[in-house]
Each structure stands twice: as C-alpha cells, then as structure tokens.
Length: 381
Image 1 (spheres, rainbow, N blue to C red):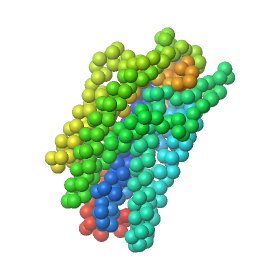
Image 2 (cartoon, rainbow, N blue to C red):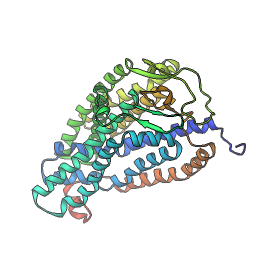
Image 3 (cartoon, rainbow, N blue to C red):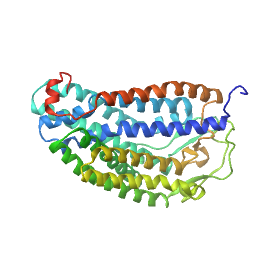
C-alpha cells in the first residue's frame, strides 16, 4: 500500500465527493428530461406542440442517462455494501423507476409511427409517466435515507432487509418526493422556456414559476421536519483508514442528530440557502421571461438541495433504522484501498470525456425548437 500516493481515508472522502457529484450530475442533466416529460400534458395541447416539447429532449435524453449508469457503477465498485443493501432493499422502488424509464425510449420511437390521435395520446401519457414516476420515487428514496432503512447485518455480514414497498411510503418520504418532483418540474420548465417560444414557452414559465416557489416552500418544511426526526450519530469516533466492517462501530439515533454537522461547520448553511435562493430566483426569472438564467439558477438550487442532504448525513451513506450499528458509512463500506485508487485513475480519464461530449452535444443542439425546424429534420419525433 505504500506505493499508493493517496491514503485510504483521503480516497474514501474523494469517492464520497465523486458519488455526490455523479448524483448531482444526474439530477441536473437527466432531471430536466424528467421535468419536461412531466410538464408535457400541461404545456402542450396540440399534436404539433407535443412534438415540439418532445424534440426538446429527444436528441439528448439518451446521453443524459450516462449519469445514471455511471452513478450506479460507482456505487457498485466503490461502495459494494451500499449497492447490495440499497438495490435489494429498494427493489420494488427500483423496479418502478426502471419500468418508467423503459417507457421513455419506447414512447419516443413509437409515438409518431401511427397518425391516429388515440395512439399518440396513449404514448404521450406513457411519456408523462416516465417523467413523473422517477422524479417522485427518487425523492421518496432520499427521504428513506434520512429516516433510516430497516436492514441489518448478521455476524457473517449477510444483509437482512425487513421492509417492503409500502414501508417506504410515509408522510415524510412523500414530502421528500414532492420536493424532488417540484424541483425537477422547475428545472424542466427552464429548459422549455429556453428552447421553445410562443404559447409553449409561456405555459412552461407559468407552471415552472409555481413549481419553483413550491420547491422552496417544501424544502424549508422538509428541513424543519428533519431537525425534529431521529438522526444518526457515531457514539465513538471511527478510524477513517480502518477496515471496511460495518459492525465495528457504535451508532446512536436521537432527535436532531442530522443537524450536528451544521453546528460543527457553520459554513455549511450556505448549502440550504443556495437551494432556497436558487428556487426563488428561478421563479422570478421565469416570470420575467429570462428562462436561460432560470435554468442556471434551478440547477444551482438542485446542487444546493442535494448537497444539503449529503452534508447532513455525512459520514453516513445508508443508516439502519432497525440496528443503527449496521449503518453504512464512508469509513466502513468502501472497496479496498487499491480498488479505490485504480477507479480514481479510470474516472480521471473518462469523466472529462463525458463532460466534453456533453458540452459538444448541447453546442450542436443549441437554438430553439419549432414546427418549421421539425419539418426540415427527418429525424424529428
């Protein structure tokens, strides 16, 4: 291990930051796809308007899915216990997301194959579901992370999960789902306002401004709720460079524990402030017709909201509500020292390629989408 230039604790922290970066990247890049699909019935009333809306995200949604795939791969490789627990414990929630996301490419490919209005309306609703369901379920999952998940490890480190789909749905987690939904609708509205014109853009700005205000209000309510629920805290400080054994620690659950990091590092309050300010500023910018800036401020709000959760829960990755000592943390749920280092080298090579490719795609696809442009483009949906 002496040949590895970064120590184990530093690599673990870097991979926690990278995981956060990938999740935020997914929320920002694929999030506007989900928001646009959710807005489809509200902003598009005619077949031509629906086609315009679909062609805003049609050329880029597949590339944006890379963030979800890379995020899942990072969890699998860097945090194997987290992957095992979350993907088995949230199995039915993952199934709902997967089923909804499968509807998206099918809807894009088949919608325009038949001119029958009922055929197209059916696929339009399928595309709406493909945006609404993941946006809601991702927020519910985040709420369950804050509440704790009913799992534990036995003496042989085999995981036992004691919950089900209905146990994931509580008033608090549904509130988190609404925060996620409003946040992504706000973000999608900014994209529609930037990429379309006329009636569609006006409707998008109107609904987006409402969603932006709801995002700020619901996020604040969620924060007040989090300050009162049981959070999780390490009773004894862990060795950041210790072995990856989730049972080698003592964890306590107590009200308000998720606020400890904000008391320890007061500068962290800038993260929730960023989430609220970005959403409120997006509402103002959408109302005044500056959708391009609104898209940037909504992205800023997403960064602030997700970073707020990450900072509150650090160093926990997935707390256990049934046996707090089985909770997974940054310091005891990672892959080996060598694995994290090799993965970091691979990421350092491929992540800039993904970023450059994404920038190139959006540069090529710049400009507004309208009916005339669709008629000239044989690949339009």
